[in-house]
Amino acid sequence: MSSILQTMIDKYSNVAMNIFDALVVFFIGWYGTKYLVKVVKRMLTNAEVDPIVSNFLGSIAMWALRIIVIITAISTLGVSTTSLVAVLTTASAAIVLGMQDYMKGIVSGFVILLAKPFVKGDLIEINGYLGKIEEIQMLYTFLITFDNKMVVIPNNDLAGNVFVNYSHEDTRRVDIELEVDYRTDVEKAKRLILEVVQKHPMTLENPIPYARVSKYGDSAITITLRVWTQTENYYALKDDLMEQIKVVFDRNDISIPFPQVDVHMDA
Image (cartoon, helix red, strand yellow):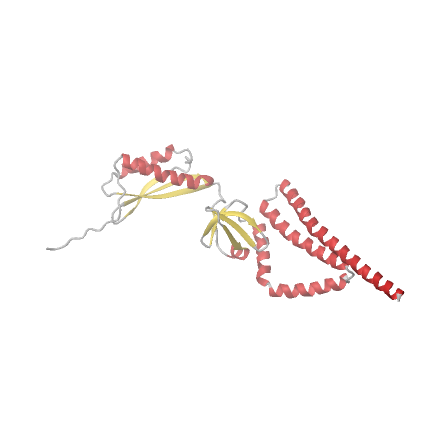
């Protein structure tokens, strides 16, 4: 009886020890992986690798290493690693077939990283959303809009659709349409507009600023202003010019008409 009891104690003691060892391996590996990925990302940052690339690679490395940790912890319990890998391979194949869209997202993420149509901080517009690139992960890209909303866009959409990158070039052209009354001295209005433009410190001298009549409307003449600036100054310059030109127009009695309809009634 005592021998049977001793055998059971030894058996379950070994099981308990294996479970303990497996838990130790799991927790150390799980959190050690997180630390290791941080170190690798720091090394990539020091090597001046694009933050988006380092974050993307870190995300993939994190899950790859954690899968290895899980397999190691399970093998510590005494489960055959060979059979476990075979089961995981079969399961992975089934999962891949059932998650083709997710796999396409991962592949799209790699395509984006290799093609580099944008980098962290670039201002892009896609599907009606305008924002700065914050991060690319395995399946999604994150944008931060001007009003500080986070927009999550599937990598499939970015790789397969047209989007606009406003930050790709160093300079941008500001286009402003200004309407003036038909009785306005057009040459005077153009001169005043260009004077405002030339005094603004964010205006580039080359290409030369341009102001010409572009359209005759129902109640107004449209003068189109085209002026170049550094990309990061685009919105500031546009807003400044809109305000300053209005002030100059008011000082010189140049009116900006509003739509109106003349109705004539026969008596």
